[in-house]
Image (cartoon, rainbow, N blue to C red; front, side, top):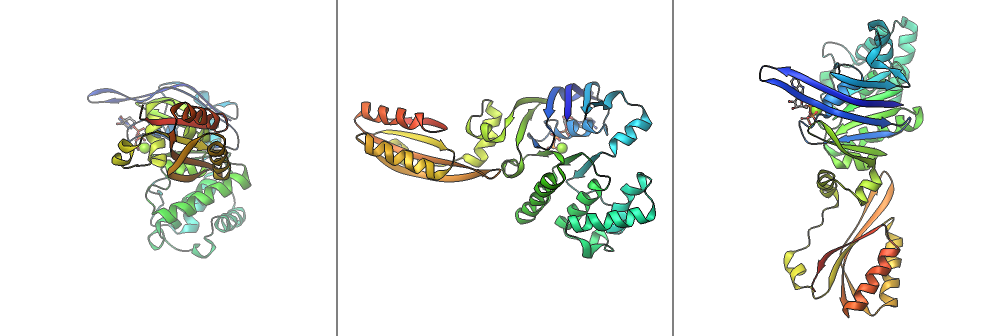
Length: 337
Ligand SMILES: Nc1ncnc2c1ncn2[C@@H]1O[C@H](COP(=O)(O)OP(=O)(O)OP(=O)(O)O)[C@@H](O)[C@H]1O
Ligand SMILES: [Mg+2]
Protein backbone atom coordinates (compact mmCIF):
# COMPACT_ATOMS: atom_id res chain seq x y z
CA UNK A 1 0.00 0.00 0.00
CA UNK A 2 2.55 2.60 1.15
CA UNK A 3 6.14 1.77 0.41
CA UNK A 4 8.89 4.08 1.61
CA UNK A 5 12.36 3.28 0.33
CA UNK A 6 15.48 4.82 1.72
CA UNK A 7 13.86 8.19 2.25
CA UNK A 8 16.05 11.14 3.16
CA UNK A 9 14.84 14.67 3.89
CA UNK A 10 17.43 17.34 4.52
CA UNK A 11 16.65 20.96 5.28
CA UNK A 12 19.05 23.70 4.34
CA UNK A 13 19.26 26.28 7.09
CA UNK A 14 21.54 29.24 7.78
CA UNK A 15 23.50 27.05 10.15
CA UNK A 16 23.89 24.31 7.55
CA UNK A 17 22.08 21.11 6.75
CA UNK A 18 19.58 19.57 9.15
CA UNK A 19 18.52 15.99 8.59
CA UNK A 20 14.80 15.54 9.21
CA UNK A 21 14.47 11.99 7.83
CA UNK A 22 17.48 9.73 7.68
CA UNK A 23 17.25 6.73 5.31
CA UNK A 24 13.83 5.48 6.33
CA UNK A 25 12.30 2.40 4.72
CA UNK A 26 8.79 1.38 5.73
CA UNK A 27 5.91 -0.69 4.48
CA UNK A 28 2.36 0.16 5.51
CA UNK A 29 -0.22 -2.49 4.65
CA UNK A 30 -3.62 -1.77 3.15
CA UNK A 31 -6.31 -1.20 5.74
CA UNK A 32 -4.05 -1.02 8.76
CA UNK A 33 -3.57 1.76 11.28
CA UNK A 34 0.13 2.39 11.47
CA UNK A 35 1.58 4.48 14.29
CA UNK A 36 4.79 6.49 14.19
CA UNK A 37 6.12 7.32 17.63
CA UNK A 38 9.03 9.47 18.71
CA UNK A 39 10.04 12.44 20.80
CA UNK A 40 9.92 16.00 19.54
CA UNK A 41 12.34 16.55 16.67
CA UNK A 42 12.58 12.84 15.82
CA UNK A 43 11.42 13.50 12.26
CA UNK A 44 7.83 12.25 12.44
CA UNK A 45 6.21 15.26 10.76
CA UNK A 46 8.98 15.46 8.18
CA UNK A 47 8.35 11.83 7.25
CA UNK A 48 4.57 12.28 7.14
CA UNK A 49 4.80 15.43 5.04
CA UNK A 50 7.03 13.56 2.60
CA UNK A 51 4.37 10.85 2.25
CA UNK A 52 2.08 13.23 0.37
CA UNK A 53 4.94 15.25 -1.01
CA UNK A 54 3.93 18.33 0.93
CA UNK A 55 7.66 18.22 1.52
CA UNK A 56 9.93 17.18 -1.31
CA UNK A 57 12.22 14.33 -0.27
CA UNK A 58 15.95 14.89 -0.81
CA UNK A 59 16.29 11.30 -1.98
CA UNK A 60 14.52 7.97 -1.83
CA UNK A 61 11.21 6.71 -3.11
CA UNK A 62 7.57 6.75 -2.01
CA UNK A 63 5.04 4.46 -3.66
CA UNK A 64 1.35 4.58 -2.86
CA UNK A 65 -0.67 1.76 -4.41
CA UNK A 66 2.32 1.07 -6.59
CA UNK A 67 2.42 4.63 -7.95
CA UNK A 68 5.83 6.22 -7.46
CA UNK A 69 4.83 9.66 -6.13
CA UNK A 70 8.41 10.80 -6.23
CA UNK A 71 8.57 10.61 -10.01
CA UNK A 72 5.14 12.02 -10.94
CA UNK A 73 4.67 15.22 -12.91
CA UNK A 74 2.83 18.13 -11.30
CA UNK A 75 -0.64 17.44 -12.74
CA UNK A 76 -0.42 13.71 -11.96
CA UNK A 77 0.80 14.46 -8.48
CA UNK A 78 -2.12 16.80 -7.84
CA UNK A 79 -4.47 13.97 -8.78
CA UNK A 80 -2.63 11.41 -6.67
CA UNK A 81 -2.69 13.79 -3.70
CA UNK A 82 -6.50 13.91 -3.70
CA UNK A 83 -6.34 10.26 -2.63
CA UNK A 84 -4.28 11.14 0.44
CA UNK A 85 -6.16 12.93 3.21
CA UNK A 86 -4.42 14.65 6.07
CA UNK A 87 -5.45 15.98 9.48
CA UNK A 88 -3.43 18.15 11.84
CA UNK A 89 -2.97 18.88 15.52
CA UNK A 90 -4.36 22.41 15.17
CA UNK A 91 -7.03 21.47 12.63
CA UNK A 92 -6.04 24.12 10.00
CA UNK A 93 -9.61 25.22 9.31
CA UNK A 94 -10.34 28.51 7.54
CA UNK A 95 -11.88 30.66 10.26
CA UNK A 96 -13.88 32.91 7.91
CA UNK A 97 -15.63 29.93 6.30
CA UNK A 98 -18.47 27.79 7.63
CA UNK A 99 -18.14 24.07 8.31
CA UNK A 100 -19.86 23.40 4.98
CA UNK A 101 -17.47 25.69 3.11
CA UNK A 102 -14.39 24.27 4.81
CA UNK A 103 -15.33 20.80 3.65
CA UNK A 104 -16.59 21.75 0.19
CA UNK A 105 -13.29 23.47 -0.54
CA UNK A 106 -11.64 20.06 -0.94
CA UNK A 107 -14.40 18.97 -3.34
CA UNK A 108 -14.12 22.11 -5.42
CA UNK A 109 -10.43 21.36 -5.80
CA UNK A 110 -11.50 18.06 -7.35
CA UNK A 111 -13.87 19.91 -9.76
CA UNK A 112 -17.11 18.52 -8.33
CA UNK A 113 -20.35 20.32 -9.23
CA UNK A 114 -22.70 22.00 -6.76
CA UNK A 115 -25.15 19.10 -6.42
CA UNK A 116 -22.34 16.57 -5.94
CA UNK A 117 -20.72 18.81 -3.35
CA UNK A 118 -23.94 19.28 -1.42
CA UNK A 119 -24.64 15.56 -1.35
CA UNK A 120 -21.12 14.61 -0.34
CA UNK A 121 -20.81 17.22 2.43
CA UNK A 122 -24.14 16.04 3.87
CA UNK A 123 -22.85 12.45 3.91
CA UNK A 124 -19.55 13.47 5.46
CA UNK A 125 -21.17 15.55 8.20
CA UNK A 126 -23.34 12.60 9.08
CA UNK A 127 -20.33 10.29 9.17
CA UNK A 128 -18.46 12.52 11.63
CA UNK A 129 -21.58 13.34 13.67
CA UNK A 130 -21.81 17.05 12.87
CA UNK A 131 -24.94 17.33 10.74
CA UNK A 132 -26.26 20.12 12.96
CA UNK A 133 -23.09 22.24 12.61
CA UNK A 134 -23.24 22.64 8.86
CA UNK A 135 -23.47 26.44 8.96
CA UNK A 136 -21.37 27.07 12.07
CA UNK A 137 -18.00 28.83 11.96
CA UNK A 138 -14.88 27.19 13.42
CA UNK A 139 -14.86 29.66 16.35
CA UNK A 140 -18.25 28.30 17.39
CA UNK A 141 -16.94 24.72 17.66
CA UNK A 142 -15.11 22.80 20.38
CA UNK A 143 -11.68 21.32 19.65
CA UNK A 144 -13.15 17.87 19.12
CA UNK A 145 -15.77 19.25 16.72
CA UNK A 146 -13.07 21.13 14.79
CA UNK A 147 -11.11 17.92 14.40
CA UNK A 148 -14.27 16.20 13.12
CA UNK A 149 -14.52 18.90 10.46
CA UNK A 150 -10.85 18.28 9.68
CA UNK A 151 -11.59 14.57 9.29
CA UNK A 152 -14.64 15.23 7.07
CA UNK A 153 -12.54 17.52 4.88
CA UNK A 154 -9.76 14.94 4.65
CA UNK A 155 -12.26 12.24 3.62
CA UNK A 156 -14.07 14.40 1.07
CA UNK A 157 -12.47 12.91 -2.03
CA UNK A 158 -12.59 9.28 -0.87
CA UNK A 159 -8.91 8.97 -0.11
CA UNK A 160 -7.27 5.58 0.26
CA UNK A 161 -4.86 6.92 2.87
CA UNK A 162 -5.35 9.22 5.84
CA UNK A 163 -2.30 10.85 7.41
CA UNK A 164 -2.74 12.15 10.96
CA UNK A 165 -0.16 14.44 12.52
CA UNK A 166 -0.71 14.55 16.30
CA UNK A 167 -4.43 14.71 15.57
CA UNK A 168 -5.45 14.35 19.21
CA UNK A 169 -2.60 16.17 20.97
CA UNK A 170 -4.61 19.38 21.41
CA UNK A 171 -7.62 17.55 22.86
CA UNK A 172 -8.62 16.51 26.37
CA UNK A 173 -8.66 12.77 27.20
CA UNK A 174 -12.35 12.14 26.64
CA UNK A 175 -12.42 14.08 23.36
CA UNK A 176 -9.28 12.18 22.32
CA UNK A 177 -11.19 8.95 22.94
CA UNK A 178 -14.09 10.06 20.76
CA UNK A 179 -11.80 11.09 17.91
CA UNK A 180 -9.90 7.79 18.16
CA UNK A 181 -13.19 5.91 18.02
CA UNK A 182 -14.12 7.86 14.91
CA UNK A 183 -10.77 7.01 13.29
CA UNK A 184 -11.27 3.33 14.12
CA UNK A 185 -14.76 3.47 12.65
CA UNK A 186 -13.65 4.98 9.35
CA UNK A 187 -10.74 2.57 9.18
CA UNK A 188 -13.14 -0.34 9.62
CA UNK A 189 -16.05 0.88 7.53
CA UNK A 190 -14.18 2.52 4.67
CA UNK A 191 -11.14 0.24 4.73
CA UNK A 192 -9.02 3.37 4.91
CA UNK A 193 -5.30 2.96 5.60
CA UNK A 194 -4.26 5.33 8.38
CA UNK A 195 -0.78 6.54 9.29
CA UNK A 196 -0.82 8.25 12.62
CA UNK A 197 1.93 10.22 14.32
CA UNK A 198 1.91 10.63 18.05
CA UNK A 199 4.10 10.92 21.10
CA UNK A 200 1.38 9.35 23.25
CA UNK A 201 1.58 5.59 23.67
CA UNK A 202 -2.02 5.59 24.86
CA UNK A 203 -3.07 6.52 21.34
CA UNK A 204 -0.96 3.76 19.79
CA UNK A 205 -2.24 1.22 22.28
CA UNK A 206 -5.82 2.16 21.54
CA UNK A 207 -5.88 2.14 17.73
CA UNK A 208 -2.70 1.00 16.00
CA UNK A 209 -2.01 -2.41 14.45
CA UNK A 210 1.68 -1.83 13.86
CA UNK A 211 4.07 0.92 14.80
CA UNK A 212 7.49 2.35 14.12
CA UNK A 213 9.67 4.20 16.61
CA UNK A 214 11.73 7.12 15.31
CA UNK A 215 14.84 8.75 16.73
CA UNK A 216 17.10 11.30 15.05
CA UNK A 217 15.32 10.91 11.74
CA UNK A 218 15.68 7.13 11.61
CA UNK A 219 13.33 4.24 12.40
CA UNK A 220 14.89 2.33 15.29
CA UNK A 221 12.22 -0.36 15.64
CA UNK A 222 9.10 -1.48 13.83
CA UNK A 223 6.55 -4.20 14.48
CA UNK A 224 3.11 -5.25 15.67
CA UNK A 225 2.05 -3.14 18.61
CA UNK A 226 1.21 -6.18 20.75
CA UNK A 227 4.63 -7.75 20.08
CA UNK A 228 6.45 -4.52 20.88
CA UNK A 229 4.50 -4.17 24.11
CA UNK A 230 5.58 -7.64 25.20
CA UNK A 231 9.07 -7.72 23.66
CA UNK A 232 10.53 -4.30 22.86
CA UNK A 233 14.15 -4.58 21.68
CA UNK A 234 15.25 -0.98 21.36
CA UNK A 235 15.82 1.08 24.55
CA UNK A 236 13.69 3.93 23.19
CA UNK A 237 10.82 1.56 22.41
CA UNK A 238 11.15 0.28 25.99
CA UNK A 239 10.95 3.82 27.27
CA UNK A 240 7.74 4.48 25.36
CA UNK A 241 6.21 1.15 26.37
CA UNK A 242 7.11 1.84 29.98
CA UNK A 243 4.94 4.94 29.98
CA UNK A 244 2.06 2.45 29.86
CA UNK A 245 3.43 -0.66 31.53
CA UNK A 246 5.34 1.01 34.34
CA UNK A 247 4.59 -0.31 37.80
CA UNK A 248 6.11 1.25 40.82
CA UNK A 249 6.66 -1.23 43.59
CA UNK A 250 7.96 0.41 46.77
CA UNK A 251 11.73 -0.10 47.07
CA UNK A 252 11.31 -1.20 50.69
CA UNK A 253 9.08 -4.05 49.58
CA UNK A 254 11.56 -5.15 46.91
CA UNK A 255 14.57 -5.08 49.22
CA UNK A 256 12.78 -6.98 51.97
CA UNK A 257 11.78 -9.85 49.72
CA UNK A 258 13.43 -13.18 50.55
CA UNK A 259 12.48 -14.82 47.23
CA UNK A 260 12.31 -13.97 43.58
CA UNK A 261 10.09 -11.29 42.13
CA UNK A 262 8.85 -11.93 38.63
CA UNK A 263 6.89 -9.90 36.14
CA UNK A 264 4.63 -12.04 33.99
CA UNK A 265 2.85 -11.12 30.78
CA UNK A 266 -0.26 -13.01 29.76
CA UNK A 267 -2.53 -12.76 26.81
CA UNK A 268 -5.60 -12.08 28.92
CA UNK A 269 -5.87 -12.04 32.69
CA UNK A 270 -8.03 -15.11 33.20
CA UNK A 271 -5.39 -17.28 31.54
CA UNK A 272 -2.82 -15.69 33.83
CA UNK A 273 -4.64 -16.42 37.04
CA UNK A 274 -5.06 -20.08 36.05
CA UNK A 275 -1.35 -20.52 35.29
CA UNK A 276 -0.34 -18.93 38.57
CA UNK A 277 -2.69 -21.05 40.67
CA UNK A 278 -1.56 -24.19 38.79
CA UNK A 279 2.06 -23.31 39.54
CA UNK A 280 1.35 -22.72 43.22
CA UNK A 281 -0.44 -26.09 43.49
CA UNK A 282 2.21 -28.02 41.57
CA UNK A 283 5.30 -26.66 43.29
CA UNK A 284 6.10 -26.05 46.94
CA UNK A 285 6.28 -22.30 46.67
CA UNK A 286 4.31 -19.39 48.00
CA UNK A 287 3.11 -16.68 45.68
CA UNK A 288 2.32 -13.16 46.73
CA UNK A 289 0.81 -10.88 44.11
CA UNK A 290 2.35 -7.41 44.38
CA UNK A 291 0.69 -5.89 41.36
CA UNK A 292 -1.72 -6.80 38.62
CA UNK A 293 -3.11 -4.99 35.63
CA UNK A 294 -4.78 -5.64 32.29
CA UNK A 295 -4.06 -3.41 29.34
CA UNK A 296 -6.03 -3.64 26.14
CA UNK A 297 -3.82 -3.35 23.07
CA UNK A 298 -6.28 -2.55 20.33
CA UNK A 299 -8.88 -4.62 22.19
CA UNK A 300 -6.57 -7.62 22.81
CA UNK A 301 -6.03 -8.04 26.55
CA UNK A 302 -2.50 -8.10 27.92
CA UNK A 303 -2.38 -9.10 31.57
CA UNK A 304 0.63 -8.20 33.67
CA UNK A 305 1.31 -9.50 37.15
CA UNK A 306 4.19 -8.91 39.50
CA UNK A 307 4.54 -11.81 41.90
CA UNK A 308 6.89 -12.67 44.69
CA UNK A 309 7.75 -16.36 44.80
CA UNK A 310 9.28 -17.75 47.98
CA UNK A 311 10.30 -21.20 49.14
CA UNK A 312 13.11 -23.64 48.43
CA UNK A 313 15.23 -21.93 45.69
CA UNK A 314 15.22 -25.01 43.40
CA UNK A 315 11.46 -25.27 43.74
CA UNK A 316 11.07 -21.54 43.02
CA UNK A 317 13.13 -22.01 39.84
CA UNK A 318 10.99 -24.95 38.79
CA UNK A 319 7.84 -22.86 39.30
CA UNK A 320 9.38 -20.05 37.23
CA UNK A 321 10.19 -22.47 34.40
CA UNK A 322 6.67 -23.78 34.52
CA UNK A 323 5.09 -20.33 34.37
CA UNK A 324 7.50 -19.29 31.63
CA UNK A 325 6.46 -22.22 29.46
CA UNK A 326 2.82 -21.18 29.65
CA UNK A 327 3.01 -17.40 29.27
CA UNK A 328 3.95 -14.73 26.75
CA UNK A 329 6.91 -13.59 28.74
CA UNK A 330 8.40 -13.70 32.23
CA UNK A 331 11.06 -11.38 33.61
CA UNK A 332 12.82 -11.92 36.92
CA UNK A 333 12.96 -8.40 38.29
CA UNK A 334 14.55 -9.29 41.60
CA UNK A 335 16.50 -12.26 42.81
CA UNK A 336 17.29 -12.24 46.51
CA UNK A 337 19.95 -14.89 46.05
N1 LIG B 1 11.29 23.49 7.62
C1 LIG B 1 12.34 23.10 8.33
N2 LIG B 1 13.54 23.73 8.19
C2 LIG B 1 14.61 23.31 8.89
N3 LIG B 1 14.61 22.28 9.73
C3 LIG B 1 13.46 21.62 9.92
C4 LIG B 1 12.26 21.98 9.23
N4 LIG B 1 11.27 21.13 9.59
C5 LIG B 1 11.82 20.28 10.47
N5 LIG B 1 13.13 20.56 10.67
C6 LIG B 1 14.07 19.82 11.54
O1 LIG B 1 13.97 18.44 11.24
C7 LIG B 1 14.00 17.66 12.44
C8 LIG B 1 12.74 16.83 12.52
O2 LIG B 1 11.63 17.69 12.72
P1 LIG B 1 10.12 17.20 12.71
O3 LIG B 1 9.25 18.40 12.73
O4 LIG B 1 9.93 16.25 11.60
O5 LIG B 1 10.03 16.43 14.10
P2 LIG B 1 8.78 15.80 14.86
O6 LIG B 1 9.18 14.41 15.22
O7 LIG B 1 7.56 15.98 14.06
O8 LIG B 1 8.72 16.68 16.16
P3 LIG B 1 7.42 17.20 17.01
O9 LIG B 1 7.00 16.04 17.88
O10 LIG B 1 7.98 18.31 17.85
O11 LIG B 1 6.38 17.66 16.05
C9 LIG B 1 14.18 18.64 13.58
O12 LIG B 1 15.54 18.69 13.88
C10 LIG B 1 13.68 19.94 13.01
O13 LIG B 1 14.33 21.03 13.61
MG1 LIG C 1 5.76 17.04 14.35
